[in-house]
Image 1 (tube, rainbow, N blue to C red):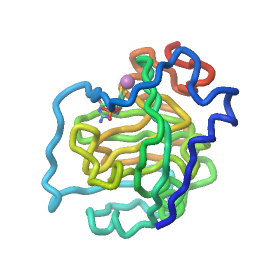
Image 2: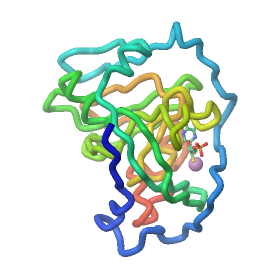
Image 3: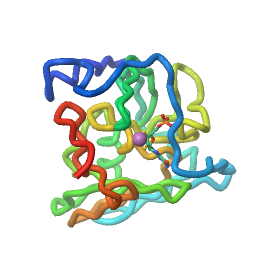
Image 4: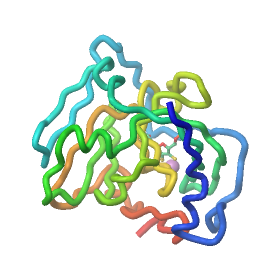
Length: 198
Ligand SMILES: Nc1nc2c(c(=O)[nH]1)N[C@H]1C(S)=C(S)[C@@H](COP(=O)(O)O)O[C@H]1N2
Ligand SMILES: [Mo]
């Protein structure tokens, strides 16, 4: 498995690794809107729907057969803390997109999760190697509180863009908004531009 350090991606967006208005913490706080789901992995399914050539329904074994990578990434929460050097292993978003065959007119993505959380991002912000469907953190299975068995991580965006307990991706031809985006959080969520709310 390749091990890639993507902690320098901030250079694309700003001068400092720590985005403005953030403070660094060595903890990994847990932020969830509700209860933690506890899926039975024999029934677990991941779906890819919308503007694709091949809609997919993958069980855990099929999902884990996708290409994987380990990355060192930073994690920026919109409430003001950042955690440097998280090691996540997962499936890069572009690998999943390629497998499904995304239509040319797709421009946006909706992620959905087992706790009914949803979050959306423009497609070009998802088609990046560092957007991972992560199943491992620091060499161990991703802890349930942090979204295990599977979550999204978005080191170039505030962490609310990373759906914990993710179980579906929909490719959209028009933007739609997710749980926090409907409640006034930024759709773009660039930490170096402090796109927090709108
Ligand atoms: N499914 C789901 N994903 C979620 C959330 C949630 O409530 N449900 N909270 C989001 C928010 S607001 C943040 S800051 C991060 C927190 O991730 P953590 O609990 O691993 O720190 O998860 C995001 N993903
Ligand atoms: Mo958050």
